[in-house]
Length: 354
Image 1 (spheres, rainbow, N blue to C red):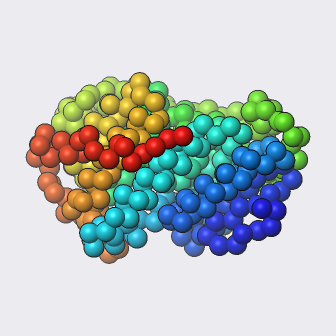
Image 2 (image 1 turned 180 degrees about the vertical axis):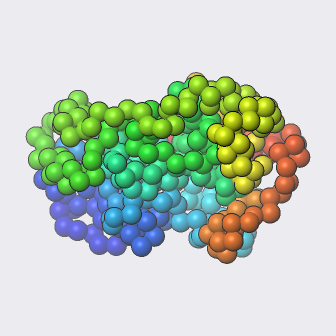
């Protein structure tokens, strides 16, 4: 493993660090099934190697760590009645859980764009570094989907209703807001990442999680809250409901500039996706990550079969007309019967966490 394995995923040893580099810069490092498998194999080797003190996840290029999963390929499989979603999400979610409990310090450089599957690879890490360039989001409701890869766990454990807001709107967090939402731990200026990276490779063997945290802290700005955190009181008031109809009604009653802008954003999202997301977020409160991943997997299997997913991806990624036709078109038309299959007790036995 000391040499470079060139390709979409580069895994190599540099000093005391096991480096995992997502290497599809033209696609902002969108992750494929084979990349997930390569990451899992790299973690096997790094975990077993006593000379490796720390794992470092990074993205190639200047645009970001990872823009998410390879959604176009999933769309093609869904249209053809294939089973890529079932296979990819099973392996991805198991990997997300592995990262959460990995026995060695796992540092994620969440620089630039970090979305969807990129969040799953980074926000479950033991040491999460954002920068002044970070743009982190879980925009899945705009694809007829919901925040997965443990997103319901992360969002439901954010302060107040901040996670509900980010999950339903798909809005972007900057670095400090990612810390406030508990998706990250430190803001480090992007210009200092090379210096921090070099320091991580020079760690002593046996370095503890506390040692790694102290090292990163020496590069950090100390910022812990961004612009969205300042709106937490109004977000808590408007999003503290268990039904989408009540959230919409609260936004209309409030009538502030923020509320109206938020309404406009929600009106662009999949009604079914929002209802499913809110239900999963409420179920995730008090749950362990693995429990959330099992629920997400069940729901994802239903999403993969849905017209909304194919239509959302078509409008955002394929045709890029940004004009999806959702089914049903209104939140009040999403019935309990429509919601039930997303919560059905199926597929759980396929997720086996070690």
